[in-house]
Structures are given as structure tokens and as C-alpha cells.
Length: 330
Image 1 (cartoon, rainbow, N blue to C red):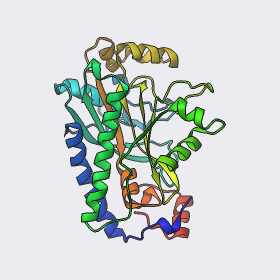
Image 2: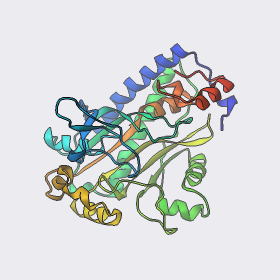
Image 3: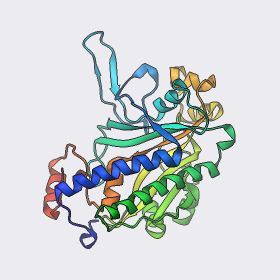
Image 4: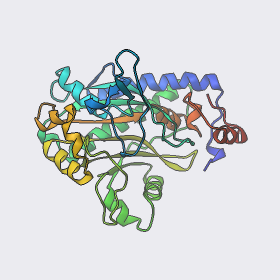
């Protein structure tokens, strides 16, 4: 729902200027908070590598074969698996990590105020030790990201933009606790209710079945440990909604990979190079996630449509909606 009185008018060049400021500033703060360095990342992977992120498992990939040898390539949907392989390949030490600009095409994503078929995010990954595989370490990492976001918002004030207040206090709640608190609601309705109340929320434990027999949301079985992951949400006043900024988690180890593959039934994945490297304990233990670049700009600039901060394809329905509300998209 568009809350017009909360909407701050900005001309298109000012939006472009502030988008650049946000991305540059947040990137530096994220690297500092989590001790990361920037690396280059692929746009394309082969199916056989097992590096493609299958998301919820039903999304169609964008794929094509190349002229030279007929190899079929897929445009990445995220870099959840590639990053962990890169930690090993580049020999990152413990408690150090990487981040990268990830761009993807998700052809089956919705097109609306907060969804686009073009995805841009900061993907990050960090080496940890077994003792770090716990909720407290996950919460520590979440708080570090929220601090970087809030500090970026404060920095915007010094650059002439003011209007969005970011709550630095993160409210943590498990997906089961959230269901118990708001029974007889959908997952998105629960997210809205809790986030409107507490402003900055992290929902823990996404992927496993809850007491109602359904997961809070779908997660691929082969990157996040479903007990040690979650989504970071902020209350977005302009749209009166819970805006997901990041999905992140501690990654599967040998034991949890087996367990989650068994629950999902995707045993064929255990033959992929990536999965064998986890089972053989070649890859380091890690934590990581993705942080939406366009969504962060939406949040910090108080935008009403993701098309205001991202150049993408929009159908006639979205174009007409923005025109009717006086919203200028890129």
C-alpha cells in the first residue's frame, strides 16, 4: 500500500546521485564490519558444477549453449555456493571473507513494487570454525550488517538527504515462535505484523517444517543450515510493509548436508563437484548471505517502487501503476 504522505519527492538525477552514495558507502562499511575484501565473480556457471543456486527449487534458470563446443551455461540465480568454493580456492584465513557484486536474472520472479526479474546484491562469505556454528555467532553477524545499514543512512544526512530512520536494535525471533505468536496467518502476514511492531527483525530458522507442517519459506537444502539461517526485514513506511533486505546463514557442514538432502529428496546433487567437496570436508566452514542493493536503496531513500532505483524490464501493469501515482522509474 502506497502511503503518499511518507513519500519524499526526488528528481531522477538526485536519485542516481544518492544511489551511488549508498552503494559506495555501504560497501565499505560492510567490508569493515565483517572483515571482507572484494573479489570478482562469475555471471555464468555450468549445470554440472553444482554451483547454481536452486533457490526454492522450482525456478527456471536462464540457460543457453555456446557456439564453440555446445556447452550449456546457466546465468546464476545467486552465488551462494560459488562463494564458499572461492574461500577455499583463494585460501582465505579464519574469520576473513569476501564480498562481490552479484547480478542475476530470475525469470520467474514477480514484477511488483519490490520484485524484479533483474537481481543485484552484495554476496558475501566468511570462513568460520566449528565453534562458530551457533545462533550467537549468527546474531553477531546480523547486528554487524544492521550497523552498516544504519551508519549508511546516517551518512546520507551529511550528503543532503534526510527522511529515513533505521532502527539499530534487531528483534530476533524464530519462525516457529512467529507462527505461535500469529497463528492462522500466512508467512508474509506474520512478517508484516512483527516488523511493523519492532521495525528491524531477523527471523531465524527458515527451511524446515513448522508445527503447521509447512516451512516459513522455502530454502534450497544444500547451502544454509536451516537451523542457523534467517531473513533480515525492515519496516518500510512508504509501502507500509516488511521489506526483506537480506537472506543469510551459517552454511551446511557434512552432517547437515546429508540431513537436508535426505529431507528434500535431491540425492542426485551429492554427485556434483561442490557437494562432494563438502562431504569430503575440503571446503571451509562458512557463513554468508546476500544483501539486496536495489532494495537497500529503496529503503534508505524511501522509494515506492524498485524501478525507481533499478533499470530493468517492466510490464504495462507496473508502468501504468507508477504513472498513476506520479512515480518516475528509471
